[in-house]
Image 1: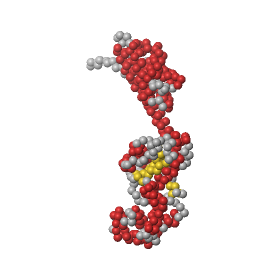
Image 2: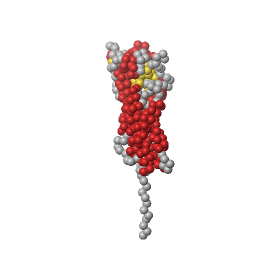
Image 3: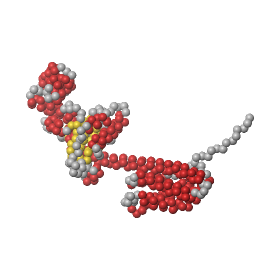
Image 4: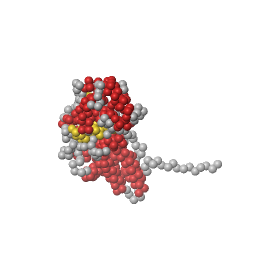
Length: 424
């Protein structure tokens, strides 16, 4: 049998030739000089006033550049690298993220270091070292890929954590202002940017999420609600959202008047969250008025729902009389009790509500309920017989409407009951 010719194992893509290592070695004595150049050139690129006072940032940049240059030089002898090679880059990226330095500035600094090092290698190359220079270019690009990835990943992770903390603080302040548990002090007002009050919105989603996949569905719904509000209102919207809706505030702007709800916002909310949405808006002149405005907006929705109004935008003026009749006073319990005789007759309660909402139009009531007009007449007569309310007289109609509203809304001392506290 003829022996197979032996082949030479191709070198690893991380192995560096002796000529390339020799070229890097000639540049190593210039590392301090190159680090200072990187710091100087980077300083010239940064707009005036954007650098840290006292030159601390320049010193850090020079130190990081020096470390990066030495890391590259070491990589020509130790291609595998070490687990913590990128730790200084990650630490600096996290620090810059906390300071609010834009990511583009950070990445430009590293790109500048690559350019300066490449120029030094190019200038130090001798005739016949073209192959070594090309080899080092590939090594430099691989090193840049790893460093840039580590820097960007760390920076974005840190910014995401900082943004989440800031959002949670703002949401906590807003929640306290809306439920009245926090005073509208100057610090709280400045934190939210509501020095000029704002438009307080209450939202209620009509169809709850199903039990299967409920948590995921609710998170998506809250995110979509927030996105739709920001898009529909054309600016910043502060939100405290619950599983079934929640509250939002559109900050007022000096000299621009109070924000208004644009046409089509409820349709946009319905489309984006996949369910019918009720929305009420009440202006608040100052942040100290947020709690009262939030309570009023929530109550407007409760009254509108109890009146049988379809989902959409509800204003106080739309339900002014019903809002007044539904206030919780000493007479509320006796009035609500007028309908106790038909409390276990949902068909009679539904007929009464539809009849009053239809302006006492018996044929319109019949169409909405899918009944014959005579059936409606019979049910109304039965209601009168059981409750003693004369629905043909103004006083009987007013009492029936007030009783329905008081049974359909729950208030405590004129304020709506507290809603859930889950936020988005």
